[in-house]
Length: 489
Length: 95
Image (cartoon, rainbow over all chains, first blue to last red; front, side, top):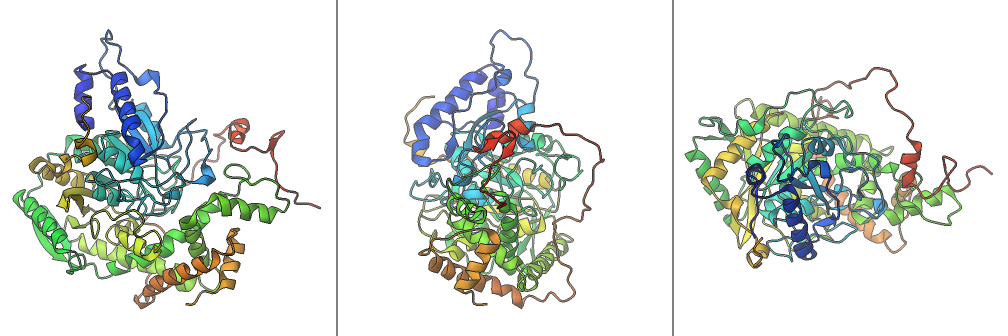
């Protein structure tokens, strides 16, 4: 079973080797055949918009839009008009948004076709896609393992060839970590690069929409259609959007990549260190120069995040009271009890844990010691990056400490689960763009490497990754789930 | 910082969240672990550091004060099962 890239699909469609309808049906039947073992999708029975299925063989008109007929999946955190959007939660089990998220609307305008809504950790809170009300997602490389989270459904679907590309969100690593665990490419753009309008809010100063794809090239193709100023998002930035896909071959020789000594302190297992060393060699052969740097406060990333993110989450999730939308209990006569019960039943454990943590750190008597302190440490981390970028163009590090862990391994130990994010969180705290791409295997499980760039330098991340992917083939390795299938589609 | 059962109850009051009685000890233990992890922040030297609320140096943008939305109440109220004559129904608030 072949995994088609977006680039390949564009060629197949323009050369009329396949029609948009045939392509859509192909992916629809793959989901039907394989998703039972992955549980990557929450909704997959969406009817394609006929206007974008320009598959009439008699039509002479050229394909007009950048993404005409390209199927994609969207994490179930993006509002999709008329299509259930659950955020992986009982609270929104039956919520049907009356509008599209801006990024969804932009992709629609460019002709892309929504295949389905993918499974995720509840309200994007988690690193394993195990907190979903709709059941855990499984990793196509080993179905007893997690694909990572919270965009695990999107990652598993792309890795398994059930969709060529998918949208995710990344608040503390939720695109990059699943990309690393499933052997694909995942990009978190600069904060403010992509609109958050219609993207259900978890932590408003950290959340960012992004892409999970089979290659940097595919990522670039989608990013140029999604990104850009949106007047409906007050945190959206008026920065022009380059045509990323046209500049992937730009000259990268002489670019300087910084290696933070705090990321390479000997705590990574030797097999993982070896893969990173190999990829550094590959980058050196492409003309990249490496330099040791220091991010002295980076060790505070996880505690900083686990004050700031829960604080913002406790505020953002206050809207779920069961009155205008969301889970509502019956036959409760007291208003306070009504709110409390709706939220007790509607939310899962991790969400409740984060609401409790967030409320605590914002409450009277604790605000200064926790929330204000965390915001100051956030500034320290931000300053470390700014200082580092004075002497390097990009920063390189691991995406994760290990390859994918087993389902059930960490779910009862929140702090152990939180430590998963140790390499990815700092980019969210500083609002920096970051990408993860596959660099090899440890015991048959994929492993990824992370590149972090200054604000709005997504092109550097994409061109470096693209040129790495031209001289390596880790990103083309196909999970066992597909290898054992004998379909000839 | 030790967190107690009555702290949890207070927080649940603030955040309008009920917990099952048998869940409370589990949350208490987990919150203790989380707070212990967060305590690491206290060793950071943040003297004269300005708190960072937003990742980019931006001003809050304002828009023109003109009407841009029209009434879509019927569409928006489709997501509630308890609507009557355009009102959302809730348990009685006023005696």
